[in-house]
Amino acid sequence: VVSTQSTGTHYHQYRQYDIRVKRRPIVNKTWEDLPILSLIADDRHCYLGNGKGDIGRLDLRNQKEVHKLRGAVGSVRCLALHSSEPYLASVGLDRHLRIHNTLTKEVEHKFYLKNKLNCVVFTKDRIKGSPGEEEDIWEQLEETGKRRKLSSDQV
Picture 1: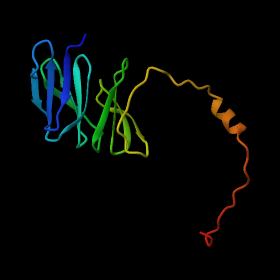
Picture 2: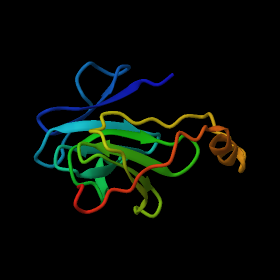
Picture 3: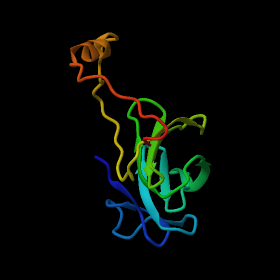
């Protein structure tokens, strides 16, 4: 049973509560100068995201900032940790999904997704597709007709 709870406040404070000890926070630490908008923790580290695009990693044993993950530009709205791999996903208002490697602290993948993103999650289900499945889909489509090319004076 987990007895600790971590929160981030609009007053740029990271707080950790232990419900077995008392109702007041056992850790109250200020981080950066902007409100903490996203937070996720595992057994050893807590990852924080703010409105400027900073993603910081705090060590839960000594409550110090270990380092910052680079790459985010806009407001970081949501963070997600992979359950078995060392990956952290981040999304925000800059419309990019970034997959950070928590061991090397580098951005492994970056995807532009056309919408302002507010949430990200890793699933345990794998999406399986056969290599020729895409070819089969294209073969099943009907041809609607030939497209006309517009000349420069029609544009």
